[in-house]
Length: 282
Length: 307
Image 1 (cartoon, chains in turn cyan, red):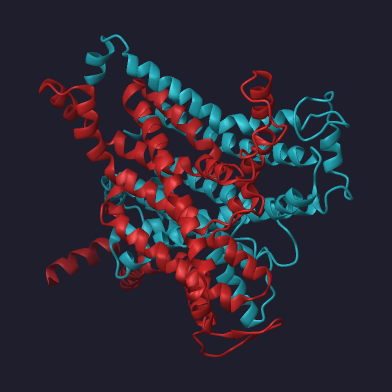
Image 2 (tube, rainbow over the protein chains, first blue to last red):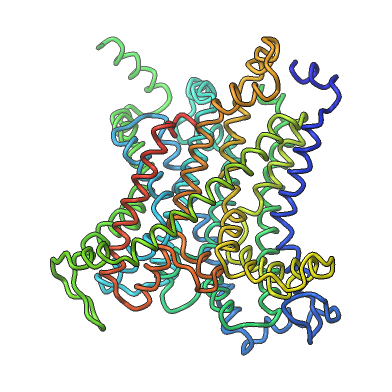
C-alpha cells in the first residue's frame, strides 16, 4: 500500500543525492579491484602502476612458473581443499546445531554466547591460542588440523547465526503436519525441513568456503609448514614488485566470484523451482 | 497420565514395533544434545582451550630460545608499565574511533538509501548484493588493490598533477594513517551496511506514514523514527567494526608500510620473535579491552532478538 502512495510522488532531490552517494560507494568498493584486474594484463615490461605498457597475459603465465613465486600451485590447492573441507564441516555442524536450538535445551544460551564470542575474539588471539596449544601438546600444526579448527571458529558462528535467522522465521506447523502424517523425525528433517531451508544452507556453504579461502590472521600460526594462498600472497607483498602480484590477485578474486555467483545462482534456481512447484505442496 | 501413555503406545504399535518406543523417548530427549555436540566440541577445542592456554602462558617465563612454565607477573608488569604499550593502545583506539565514525556514516547512508528510497524489492536485493559481494573476497587483495591507486606515481597523484591541482605527488596517501583508515573503511563498511539494512527493513512502514501524516518532515522522520529503530543494527555493526579494528594487524602492517603500530601488530611481532608469554599477556589485555567495549555496546541491543 505504502508503495503506491509513494510512487505517485516525483522523486525528491534527496533521492538523487543519495543515489549519487550510493554510486560513489560502489565505485569505492569495486574501483580498486577493477584497477588491479586491468593492471594484471600489463605487457611484459609494464610496472606496478599506469600507464599500461602493452597488453598481455605474460604475468598470468609467470604465475604458473614454479620459480617465479614460491609454491603458488601448492598453496592454491591447499586453500581450495581447506575451503571445501571447512565448507562441508560448517554446513553439517551448523545445520545440525541449528535444528537443536528451537527446542531450548539446557545450556543453549551458553553455546549461543560462545558462538558470538567466537566472532568477537580477535583472529590473532585464536591463531596464537591454537598455535600455543599445539606447541605445548607437541602436536604438529597442519593446515588440515590446527588450520581447519582455526577457520571453523570463524565460519561456524556465521553458519549458526544464519540458522537462527532461518528458524526465527520458520513456520513450525510444517513439522507438526509432517509428524501428524506419520513421518519419523528423520523423515521430517529430510523431506520437510531441509528442502525449506535449502537456500540458507547454500548461504552457509558460501560463507564456509569463502571465509576460509580468504582467511589470513587465523592461519598465521596454525598452518604449519605449508602456506595457504593468503599467506603466500602476503609473503609476495613484501618481496614481489612486478604485476605478477596483481595477476594472482585477479585470479583468486575470479575464483571467489565464481563461487559467489554459483551460490547465488543456486539460491535463485531453488526459489524459482519452489515458486513453480509451490501449488503442489499446498 | 496413564491413559495418555496407553494411547501413545497403541498408536505407536500400529506403525512401529513397540520395542522402539522407549528408545524413541530417550533419543528424543537426547537429540538436541547430540545435534549441538559437534559444534560445541569444536568451540571447546579450538576456542575455549586455546584462550585458557593463552591465559596460562601469559604467566610463564621465557628467554631467547624457549618458554619456561612458571607463575610470574613480569609479562604484565612489562606490558603495562611501558609507555610504548599505552601509545600503541591509544593509536589502535584512534583507528577504531575513526573507522567506526566513517563506517557508521557511510553504512547508514547506504542502507538508508536502499531501504527507503529504492522502491522495488528486486532492486533492493540487487543493490544489497552489490554491497555484500566484496565481503566474500580476499581482504589482502582488497588492500593491495589500493597501491596502484594511492602510490607516489599512482592514479590519484598523476590525475591531480595533470589537472594542475598539485605539482608534487602527495606523500601522505600511501603508507600513512590515512591509507590505514581508508583500508579499514573499505574492508569493514559492509559489516555496518548489512545489520543496519536488516534493522531498517524490519521497520513497519506504517509508522513512517503515521509520522508523515502527523506532519513530520523527512528529516524528522529520519531522526525520530528511523534512527531510533535502526539502533540494534547500528549496535551490531559497531561491535563488528570495533572488534575487527582492535584486533587487526595485517591492515596496519600493509597499509602503513611498517610506520604505524597497533596492538595486534605488537602481538604479531612478539610472536615472530617467539616471545609467546609476552604475546599472551598482550592478548589477555586486548581481550579484556575488547570485551569491555562489546559489553558497553551490548547494553543497547539484545542480539538474539535481532536475527
